[in-house]
Each structure stands twice: as structure tokens, then as C-alpha cells.
Amino acid sequence: MARVVVDVMLKPEILDPQGKAVHGALDRLGFELVTDVRQGKRFELEVDGEMDDEKLADVNKLAETLLSNPVIETYAVTVAS
Image (cartoon, rainbow, N blue to C red; front, side):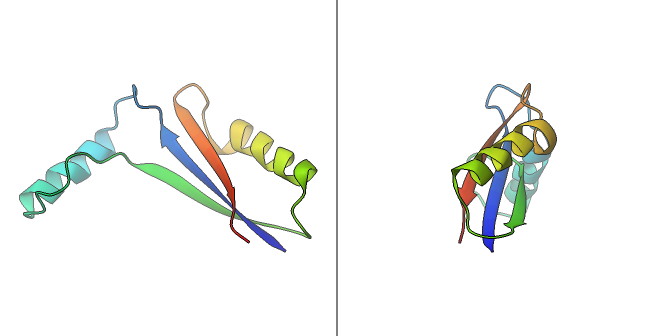
């Protein structure tokens, strides 16, 4: 069994109000070392059997069509184990 992680983030040119809210809260709590926050999503998928190129292509396809909105988001697929 393989574990695949899909990280989805807003494209840099897209406004991120949740990230801005977290950044504002960090400032109010005194965590001044953080200069910016971008918020995203993380999906951990367990895939039956060993990961191969065909399964990785399928995961990329589902990340593009279901887990992310390619108009405003980017995604990265990482095989964890």
C-alpha cells in the first residue's frame, strides 16, 4: 500500500482572505516573525499496491479534476511511502 499526499494551494495571484486572517491573528498574538501566510489543503490518499507510473498518472488526474480547481489553485503530488 502506498501513501500519496496532494497539497493544494491558491495560485499566488489569487487573494487568500483566510491566510490574511491567520496572519492578522499571529500579529495580534505577538508572533511577529511571520511575514505572510497562504492557506491551502492537504489530502492523504492510500493507494492499493505498489505505486507505479500509471497509478501516479491517475492520482494526478484526480488531483486536477476533483481535489483542486485549476483555475485558481495549483497542486503537488508526493508519494510518501
